[in-house]
Length: 434
Image (cartoon, rainbow, N blue to C red):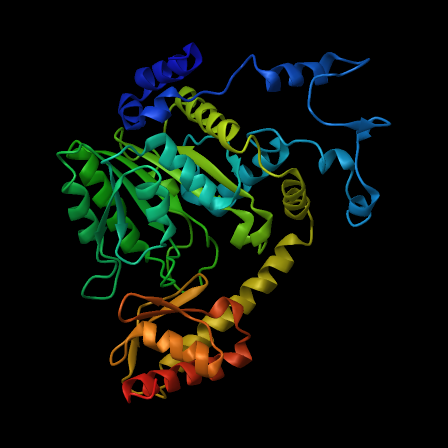
């Protein structure tokens, strides 16, 4: 094993031995080179005042070489903030301001040891890094039965982990923390579990309340006290889009430092929070360990990035940094939040109006981009096809009965027409006209 990797492993084993046990084989072996091209280039950037012939970019008149047909659309930005490679861990200024933002928006993180956020190529990349560092063939990945389909590709197909599910909602239509607890305790023989907590949930748009959150944390603590090493990942893709009386912050704060057998990992990003889906800027942050262990995990994370994509896109990091430091940012973000909240409230008003009879129920939702209908009399895929072919409407069928509707991309004044069309398609299928 490379001495640098061994040094990082030794740090984890000394300070947080259960976290060291959580690492996959790849997680143990990975490291960020200290004497490679990047480090030598960084040193040259500081000291090579005459000629810097280290890094693989082209320059012209002291600035990164570029084409005017590109730069003319980006004239607000200095070429050095667009064309050069970003560091593998991301722009330092962006990492700093995202950390400050996280602390402001998540009061429960106050006083906890957390790492510096590392920039990822959006959230899927962050989840992929977690899978690489911690998921081994045969490990259990615990998720609710209604979850984002990409989890299976990321953890099961890529890394060979086993997907273990539990019902998302309990008999009272609240988050099924007892189901989570049972699924975790069932991993006693394996001695390890990876838990994915995605709030607001894709596909149902649900965020637990305060008591539910406490029950979730208690379930994870129970598993740790039973001797199970738990990597718990808060997938906060839709963070901040909380429209009702639910948990208003990430569980990352409550999970950081919960138990010496619990590693808290926060995956978040500008993608959906700041409405910049194509910019592909996410972050991964670790919590609850010693400073040395957090640094070790940062280095392993950056090593994975170096080994896969080398570094994230520089322009989009610059764009996000500029937005976050603008005095107009909060006002504009609040305006978009109110639009999203209005759409969610309109959907709930329509569904509770009695207009659509007994053709469907809906899963509790209070946040995010989506809601899910539970069709009672028609097959979801047949309804989806009928909507596409007859009514020009796209939805997502999940299983036999569930139909996911993204209200995030429908103007509020069009929502009633949307659900009228869904209702008619359901009747068509029910009556054999599809």
